[in-house]
Image (tube, rainbow over all chains, first blue to last red; front, top):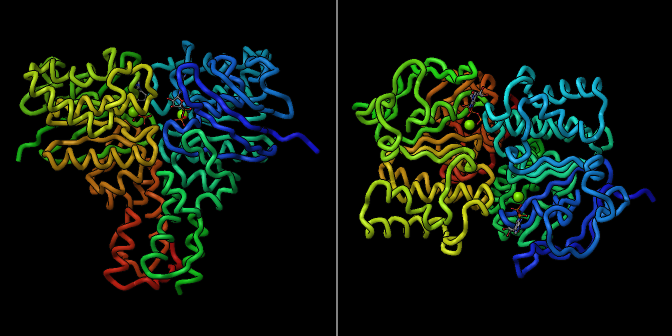
Length: 282
Length: 282
Ligand SMILES: Nc1ncnc2c1ncn2[C@@H]1O[C@H](COP(=O)(O)OP(=O)(O)OP(=O)(O)O)[C@@H](O)[C@H]1O
Ligand SMILES: Nc1ncnc2c1ncn2[C@@H]1O[C@H](COP(=O)(O)OP(=O)(O)O)[C@@H](O)[C@H]1O
Ligand SMILES: [Mg+2]
Ligand SMILES: [Mg+2]
C-alpha cells in the first residue's frame, strides 16, 4: 500500500516552560490529493501541530515530543528542516515574520534560491506566483510598502513558487479581502487536482466546509473530531460545546428545525442548503 | 449638526510615489459607527491613519473636533482618537500588559484612582487577569490586538478606530469584538472599523463606506450596500453566506436584506412563514 501523505501517531508535545502538553496524543492521517482543514479556538495548538508536520517543532522550536510524524512515509525527525522544505511548503500565521528581502521579486526568489532552482526557471515561477496572488506589477516594490493583505498575498506567493508537494497554510486568509480568500482556496483546489496535499488552518468555516475533504477539530491540545467536513459541521451541538460555529447555512437550518419542529437535512454548503430547504419546504 | 470628523478632498501620496487615497470626502457625526470595506490595497488603512494624525494629507484637509490634523500634534489628537493598528507588531508596547494598559491614561495625566478604575474595567472585559505580568511580545498577534484594544478602552477617547479587529480571532473572540463595538456605541463613542469580516458587518448592520482603488465608491447602510450587486462586484466583496442564502428564497420579504441567521428566523416566526418556497431567480 502506498504511503500516506501525512501520518501522525500518538503525538504529544510540550513547550519547555509549560507543565501541561499543548498537544496530547494526536492521531490522524491524510492521503495524497486530500485537503485537510484544521479548526479550533485560539491556543488549541493548531499552529504547533502544523509545525510538527514540517519538523520546525521540535527541531527549531524546542520542546519535548513523543510519538511519530511521517511525511510521504518517512519520519520527519530523521530529516533536516531544510530537506523537509523541499516537500513541505509552509505559510506562517504572521506574514511579516516571513518577509526579509528588499523587493517583492527578491522575496519570492529567496526560498527558491535555497532549493537551488536555476535562474531562468526562477523568472517564470516568480511571474507565475505573483499572478496567482494578484501582485503582478509590484515586483520592484519593498515588501514593507505593502498593505497588510498584500503582504499576506506575498507570503503565499513565496511558498507557491517553491512548488512543494504538500502545502501547509496557517491562517493564510485572515487579512485577505473576500475575493482573495476565495483565490487562496482555489489555489489549494488546483494543487489537489495535481495530486498535491494541503493543510489549511482557518477560523472562517464556510470556506473550510466548501473546500476541505476532511476537518480536524482541535481543542485544548486534543483531537475532538476528525472526519469528512460534512460530518464535522453538521454536529452542531458538539461545535457549540467547543465554542465553535458551523457555516451560517448549517446554523440556519438547525435553528429552523428547532424553531418550527422540522427535520430539514443539515447541509454545509450554500448550494446544498438551498436544495435541501427547497425539497422539504415547498 | 456639525460633523465631528470631516474629511475634505483628501489625497495621500506615499514617499515612494504611490497615491493610496484620492480625493476622499467623508463626514462622521457624533455617535456613529462606520465600517470601511474594500479590497486589499484599496486605501482603508491609509485613510484612517489620517484621523489621529499618523499620516497627514498631501492634498485636502481633515478636521477632528475643532482641530485641523495638519496643525495639531499627534499627542493632542490621540486624546480624541484612539487607533488600534491592523498589525499589532507596528505598535510599540511597554514590557508588561499591566503597564501597557495604564500607559495611555498616564499620558493624559489622569489621577491614579481614575486610572485604576479604567484599567480594571478593561482587564475584566478582556479577561486579562492572568496575563498582567506577561510581556506583550510573548503573546500571539490576536492576543496582542486584544491588549491594544483594552488599552484604548481604558483611555476611552471620543473616536475609536479599529483596523481589522477580528483578524486572527476565533469565534468567541469575534463575538467579543462585536459586543465591544456595541458597548462603545452605547457609551456614545464614534467607532470607525475596518474589516474583511462580512459576518461582523452583518451583525452590526451599520453605515458602510466602500473603498476601491484609492477612491470612495459607496457610503450607505450595510443592507443597501450588500444588495447593490454592481458595487459589491466592483469592490470584490461578498455578502455573508446567510444573505446569499436568503436571496435565493422567495416568501421572505423581498424588499428586505437579511444579514443574520436570527433575522430570518425572527421574520419567519412573525410571519408564520416556515414553509418558505425557493425562488427560481438569482
Ligand atoms: N508605507 C507605504 N509606502 C508606500 N505605499 C504604501 C505603504 N503602505 C501602503 N501602501 C500602498 O498604498 C495603497 C493602500 O494601502 P492601505 O494599507 O491603505 O490598504 P488597505 O485598504 O488597508 O489594504 P488591506 O486590506 O490589505 O489592509 C496600496 O497600494 C499599498 O501598496
Ligand atoms: N514558542 C512557544 N513557547 C511556549 N509556549 C507556546 C509557544 N508557542 C505557542 N505556545 C503555547 O502553546 C499553546 C498552543 O499554541 P498554538 O499552537 O499557537 O495554538 P493555536 O495556533 O491553535 O492558536 C498555547 O497555549 C500557546 O500559548
Ligand atoms: Mg495559530
Ligand atoms: Mg489595511
